Length: 224
Ligand SMILES: C[S@@+](CC[C@H](N)C(=O)[O-])C[C@H]1O[C@@H](n2cnc3c(N)ncnc32)[C@H](O)[C@@H]1O
Image (cartoon, rainbow, N blue to C red; front, side, top):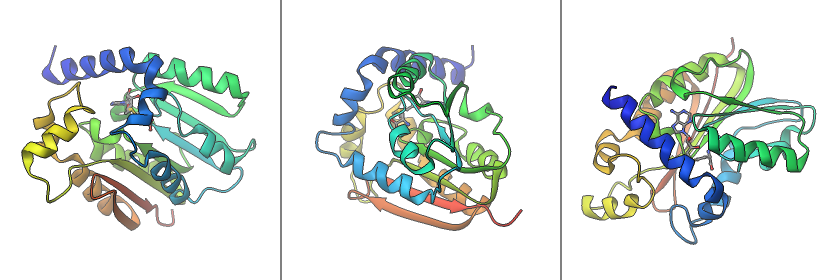
């Protein structure tokens, strides 16, 4: 088994263990009092969705974005949640059942090899894409699938520019238990995401949130 496969296996195992408690624990993510809900709202607003639109929630986890997305696309819209971890998707399925949402489908897949359906109106990924080593490729593949004017929005954590290495390591240790923090910090995946968006999309916007501990990146596909 390659090093990459071992890392992915560890990630899946970690999320299998977390899945049942994820919704409760995520209120403390990445720290108690962190404005996660506000950040999610901003991310969904940045999608510019309208009733009837189709949207992909990439690495959707337990579906914490679904209610916000449902509100804007309505019953005539379509939501596809994609995630690698079976146990996270099982929680998402529970949420769908409890809420009686008939327009959400779930796909178990690796973001890196997901076959994006054509002509989607928007793609969202929250607190997940920096965990995917091939994040730039995922941005590129998603951008190709978007309809003209369609939006790609990524919300995720990052290391603030001015933070000393040891402090950043301490802060991120709690949220990245499955992979090497050094690897994540060294790889600086948020920079790869930003560069890929600039390469693949128009109107790219980059906003640092909560003292640079998170970012909201968005862009649109030009006319097709
Ligand atoms: C911190 S959770 C975020 C879940 C959700 N997006 C949210 O905002 O609550 C990260 C999720 O990314 C998923 N994930 C990590 N790597 C992935 C990959 N390569 N492909 C698809 N999903 C992945 C994990 O299974 C997990 O559900």
